[in-house]
Length: 260
Ligand code: 13P
Image (tube, rainbow, N blue to C red; front, side):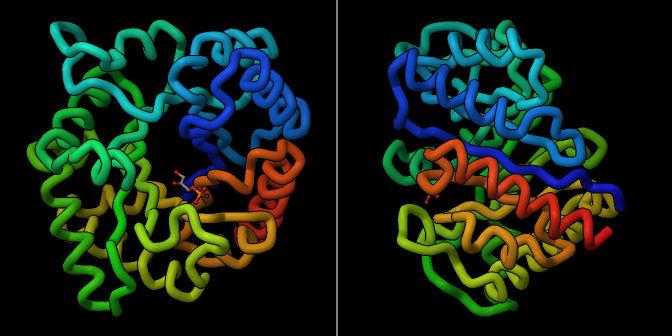
């Protein structure tokens, strides 16, 4: 199917000072230098996105840049928000939308998420849509949950527009924990997501990359991606050490390239 494996990291609001964020970006860029079999991305803390963008561009690096959130409108009276216009200007590529923390702490609903996805696509950037269930759920029920979220989040968007979409499957109950969800559970969930997506958008669902996030570490990354429907990982805390992030990249590469 030719879906390129992906490994990305969101720094949330860790590493908020220019020097530490730039050092981190430079370190992972050095340690993964020249990686072209995988697609890599970093979503820095919003306040340091500009210096990180500069650091990445200076290295002519292959690590893509993205934002953890955008406003639902490109410009206007939305105090305190971050505009997609700034991200385009910084040559950013990915827009994370609908992370659990935004849906929960900032009460983002599916309508707002849908607006942000539409705005991202209109600007030719790549939406990284996060979805997940609140509690561990079994097969068929899980698919119903995903289909409902996806139908709402992707409403009024044509399948053709969604070819670049990335979905991050992040079960709420596995974020910020000591360990990731079990690989066997994740494999079922990703299959359910792709099936639900196929029912909504048809064959384009085969192009959509679905990556797993939620307490991913170098110890679990290999087994998590060892399934054809798991196209990579979305790393958080356990990638804060650049060496660990680089190791996760290597592990994912080994498993995914072996599989192809
Ligand atoms: P943690 O790996 O720190 O649980 O974060 C996962 C996440 O939410 C990535 O977006």
